[in-house]
Every structure is written in C-alpha cells, then in structure tokens.
Image (cartoon, rainbow, N blue to C red; front, side):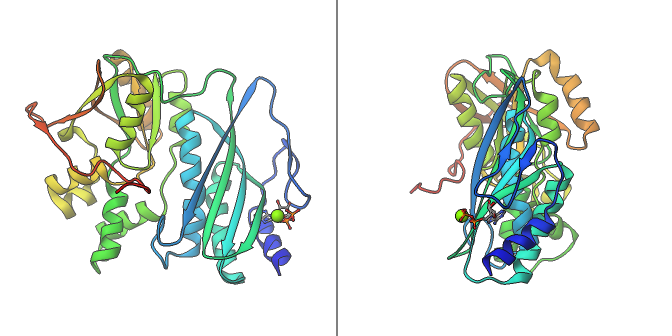
Length: 319
Ligand code: ADP
Ligand code: MG
C-alpha cells in the first residue's frame, strides 16, 4: 500500500530536470549541483490544526507545504530545484494523497521543481517538505547586511492570511473579499522571482511568515541595527481594508502570520528601480520605513506619533 501511494505521488509530480541523476525509487536521490553555485537548503513542517485549519482541502495542504519552503528559498535569492516530502497520515486514502500531490505539483511545475524523494508513514497528519535551490557562490541574500539609512520595503500586501484564518474560524462570510483572503491563507504565493531580482540589489532580506514585527525584528537583530516603521504605509489589500477597516487591518499587517511576502532593505536611491521591476512581476513593493542605528522595531503613525503593539507575532513555544 505504501508503495502504491508513493507511485501515485511520483506520477503526479513528474518533472524532468537534467540535474536529477536519480529521483524517487532508490534509497536516496542522486543530484548534480551546477559548478559555481552554492546549494541552498531549507525545511518546514506543516501540522494539521496548527499550520493549516483542520479540514483544509488536500490540494491546498500540498500547495502550502511547498509554498512556505519556496518562500525561504526566495528570501535567500535562490532558484528552486528539488524537494523531498515526508508525509505522515492517519490512513492511506488514495483520494487524499492524489489531491495533496496535485496541489504540490501545481506549484512545483510553475517553478520547474522536481520532487526527488521522501518518506511515507502512518500517524497524525503532518508534512515536512525540504527544498533545495542554487545561488551563484557568495551571492545569497541574507538577514544580516541591513545598513543605517536603508529603506525598508515589503512585497505584496500584509495581513491577508491572518484575516482569512479569522474568517474561517469566526464567521460564515463567503463573499468575494472573504474568499480572496481565505485563498491567501490556503495558497500563499512564494515570491521566488522577486527574490532573484533582489539578489545583488537588496542589502538584507527575510520572508514574513510569523508577522512583520517579529520577522523584521529578526532581520534587525542579525544586522545589528534598528528600524522605524510607518504603519500608515503598510501595504494592504482592498479586501482586507474593506472588511476590517484601517485600524484592525494595521494590526493584522503588523502581527498576523502566514503572509510569505519578502521584507527587504536597500539603499534609498535604488528603491524606485526595484519597485518598478517588482511591479512588472505583479507583486510590487512598498516602502514602509527606515533602518536606524540602535536596535528593535519602532512603530509610528503618519504624524510620527509612537505606537505600541502587544502581539509581536507567532511563536510556537511562546507563553
Ligand atoms: P527506504 O525504506 O529505503 O527509506 P522508502 O520505502 O521509504 O525507502 O521509499 C522508497 C522511495 O520512495 C525512496 O526513493 C523515497 O525517497 C521515495 N518516497 C517515499 N515516500 C515518498 C513521498 N512521500 N514523496 C516522495 N517520494 C517518496
Ligand atoms: Mg523511508
């Protein structure tokens, strides 16, 4: 049974790549790293009821498990190549596995990524995806590197996924705005192409998975700098603003998780050119603040009035 499931996954995710010497089927995959490139590796786990609401469609789970990992590669400025999938499920249900593999494959094929192996076990539903990609040696985008005076920018819009989760949990709202926000939760768009544009241009970069305040805080700590943020500039979707209004949407944009946008810093004089390139990619980028000397993330409104926020983002082992 385990083998027929693996076969279903293999067939549904087939992607030819010259650098895959041996994919699914042997004890391990054999892969060729191109000369002059560094291998970039990341892994993330999705647990039922923790990282996606219980009852989420199989295809959405498969998509999201890959998307959150591609987002980590994007934040490094890496080109995706391969993935491994460790799948734990309570029972061997072919329909569920097919859906999962189809959702995974949809996103994988968009990035020419090959699934080259994995593991299949019985237990409470959870997926770990490991991804591998390349950067020209020495040219990865890092969290460290932000410089005092840099503009702080973020791609796309923030707070949508957190609003989508609230809608699923607390309301039966299924209008077009709600559907858009729930889609942002279930099918995040990893900013892979944006990461490639930013490589060599941005000073520092991180993907926003746990909330902007928390993740920008990590970037600042790694760079040994502080940040000031203007909340009125946080990019928010029409759906989020229409449903929640200015105040509540600000809070979600600052502290909500699961956005998978890129937050980066760059010299001010480079920002306009980067913004037009990112606009061409369809995600755009907004300038939301400045890197300053010191430490921590300081939030103010359009008049410069300091603001305090209680929830600093998602922390699995937090109080
Ligand atoms: P082993 O016992 O040697 O680890 P397995 O029976 O676990 O081998 O796996 C057989 C082959 O199928 C391996 O190549 C493995 O990488 C692949 N595989 C197993 N589970 C998955 C999965 N969920 N997705 C993709 N490949 C898988
Ligand atoms: Mg195994």
